[in-house]
Figure 1: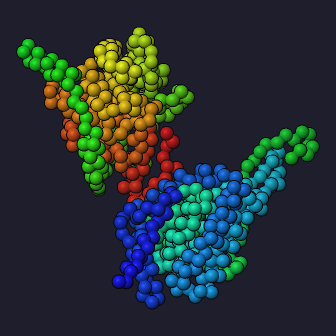
Figure 2 (figure 1 turned 120 degrees about the vertical axis):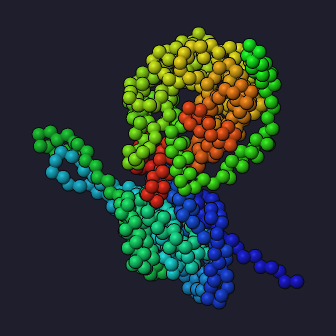
Figure 3 (figure 1 turned 90 degrees about the horizontal axis):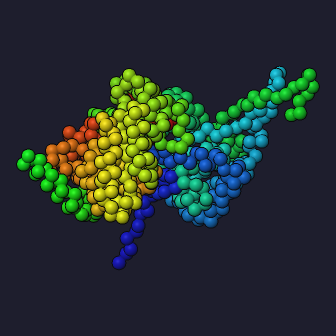
Length: 293
Length: 308
């Protein structure tokens, strides 16, 4: 008797837990050979709402963690991903990559996580400044996380696109709600399983699968989302998102890069989702003498 | 005369025969209230009703005149962006803040409720409790939220608790008396039922679950048990008693479940702030956010609502 194969049900990741979608719906994308990739949650707008609530709740403690500790946690993600490399390679191949391409994509993803882990306690030094002003003030600018950032992951990439967009955002102390690639969702959910076992506090990264067209309007109009990162390539979708974002003046960033290139990473992916806070600190300036600052 | 005697008898019967509570049965019944789905216009209506039933509460050692005035302003202007909103039912403060609240709420229909009787523990002699209550009433409180002596109740000294409630009721004058059972300390639903009956018979206008200082505070199970006590008393005497769950009700969804429960247990007559209240501090904002969501179609952020 032949064994009945179990098709994995991939669940979404909200607030450090793996619920099924509130709507109870699912879809079954297929690969080039027509094989079903898995049963994937078709998340609804209420899942988006729940994810934003979870992300908001996590902002305070995540942004207040020491930069060094955030770096440690990000590094831990890389370690855990290294340990589950084989599973990711297998999933990428199942979704249509060659073995060689899959292996190099996973390796690159790990390297990219380590790269941003390193940045955690360094970007602040680079983007902050002490500003020369013409009054008796010590004037300085520091970067602060924006808060909850919505991320629409690239459609044509399962792992590296997601990692390249999410990591710099959380590196800077933001929390995220990610809409995974609709056609290639497997690695997103498996990545959530990696996050779950790697000290990342619940709610810092929330990952939803399903129809981007259905969820993007909810995410982009949501008043409690502070910024959006669009990784797709459709200018009409981007326009719609930008229009929706006007509602609460969300900042919108659109990146279309080949994330598989080794240099598709950098400080600006971190600093884009930072607000610059400038402080005017009055100082004593007796008789025109220079101050002690 | 005969009728009076009959009523007296049924009261006695109630007091001495408080029914025991089937906990599993209560849980099942309560679970069914939570399966109701209220959508569209009914939801809007229910949300506005819930808003109108809120006792906006601040009961902290650090309460200041400024904090109370700000809360009173909020009670009258919940969210001016939304037209045709009701006000809340009352604000609930400590006796020392009653005068401030009263003057801040001048020319509005919002009542001032004051906690009293050595809230929240109730560990003070009767004379102190009476003085506490009289003070609040003289300062202008429209409603008094008293706590029962849970220690005495648990020790079985029911007549002590009964007399205390009756004495406070006398001190209240025209102010309506809410009796806080502090169900989190009563341990069993049987006790909750007994305390409810006791409070009702001693003269409570409202029975209230909790102070909000003890966990668990209001739960649907406890509230259901108290609603049943009100129902039985109403059926025996024809007199309506109000209900106020307090503490732990912070989401609109949960508030709607409570309203469903009140309607299905007691009927429409109780669906007004004269007979049902929510003691809550953060519920109002959640309801407002839901109403704004219905109005605008987009999910809201607390950033755009007043801080409470």
